[in-house]
Length: 92
Image (cartoon, rainbow, N blue to C red; front, side, top):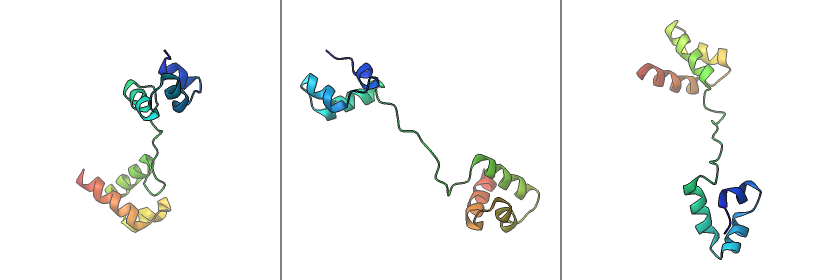
């Protein structure tokens, strides 16, 4: 019997593991997912979303009394993006 995690780490495809076990690839995929044999996809933020540093700048700017447009100019971002973050920060 094959060891799923080791085979995946060694570069074996799910399809080849399934074939060797006489199982469907979807079954092997589910087992690997449940047992941690498949690493989750790396998460990333969309470029249209403000970074943590930018969010802090919005918060500081609002606290200092700057307008949304002034903060947006400083961050080189759309005023609507900064406005949305400002509303979120204000409610938090």
